[in-house]
Length: 430
Image (tube, rainbow, N blue to C red; front, side, top):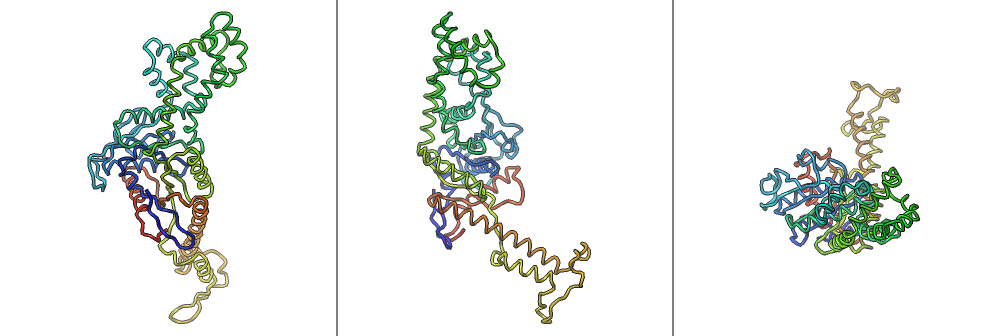
């Protein structure tokens, strides 16, 4: 959902119409991705609150280990079960013009999600054997790529339940946020690779021949997690054989579900939002996300640019403000009434005490602060223009910086309002 605008100088990027995106019943999944420390978790939560108060039944799934999402929503703790957020939606006090919406929130528990898969796709005895197996416990708790794959599984579970008409996903910080796009490929490589064939062979062959074959593949065991390296000898061999025998019939289901969720992420009902701050490093990461999503043919809705600075006195440039401050400090400002310059004492180089500050001192300090802010604004604008020149078709919603951190529903509503306002700014606005 975008709105075209024209900017001064270079053409401004299209504007991301956030409310139109959230209100569209065809939008079923919104994935927020971006570098760490750019307000991604807050953005995801704010989108969830705003969508719920505009009539959607929303669940926010966070994969970020930070606890800020729970705190801002007034929930003691988030876990692997969606929990209803009170005071939002039909019973909330937001300004939305629709009712009937609800908001739920949850945090991915990687191991618990893996356990749920086992419990759902294996009979009681086999499930119990898998869950109690030391090899499985190591795999489910720390094997490389498990978190990303379980995020795919949990997203697929939420979508299949159909209890919500909008799922907002808050991904982990840094470039690893897109690793879940590789989950099906990684899982396929793992299940079809030499290592898993080494593990499966003893369970299928059995006896002395199987033990000999497994011994030939012991070098592959070094690829497993550090936890597995602590298991030794016959105990390790027995655990591996038991695990592979129990899991053998489930491997195909893992791959099929991951592939199905991957296709779901490519479907028209999904929208990716890249979240960034107007800083060079953050926007370089944003460019990476944009390019990667294009390679994977994932539907990009646009860029949310958080913490953008502005000023109500932008007509006073940094250069003019600094010049005025220097003139004041040097006693060179001409009094408009007398026509005479206000001179300072000869020892003006010595900073005055707080109780000796004059109006000129305070004014000069404010002018310097304004100059610094204008320099920040100019630097941010150059950075945004550089990103826009490389990705002119990416719709952008600019969110002005707040004076403090967001720690409650009121703050999330304020962010949502700013997101919506960014998508409805008049043509020619920046």
